[in-house]
Image (cartoon, rainbow over all chains, first blue to last red; front, side):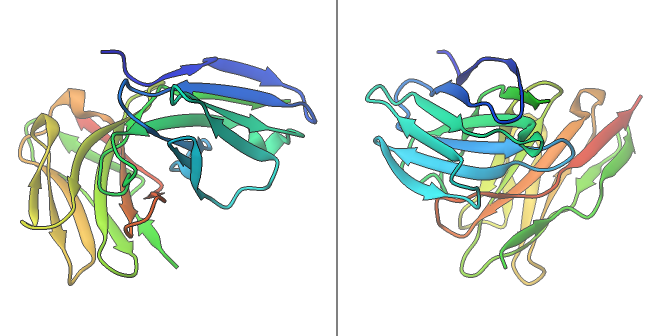
Length: 115
Length: 112
């Protein structure tokens, strides 16, 4: 079975632009979470979605938004990009809505560079 | 505030020796604790978790971790380190909500 997939692998954008990152969870997983990992730091929680509904949101500005589709894939959107948005964006899927007690399976990430 | 601390940025150990990667946490209520490993240019891989029950948890690749409630610690251990264990290790905690809180990571270097 395929693991969590993310696209694109790498992305270079200019300040002020918009970006969309995509994630496909493991087959059968209905929960998708997004994380931002800045170089040298641990992942920071951005969103969790379950059954197409937002179940949780981290401390990120409204420039960050996401959605989950009927096939459980997900998109993360970031508007008005800032240099500080440069990071590895990780998507993780889980078998349960109760992601806190189930391990998460991470994709390889999308490396976003904002210039 | 809820947090996770990994006090060592890097741990060096000789191949064949036991290794320990430290993690302490601060959460309200009962914690759910996890260890993940990250190899270069890869996402995080699950190693093990503590939800409830036995304080000694066994996981993938021969790793284990000991939950110590009084010391609020969840140290990762392995009896005999391999060069291939060299990677970045993250401790994570959740207080029973959707939100994972990750530590800053510890780079493990196993020397041949």
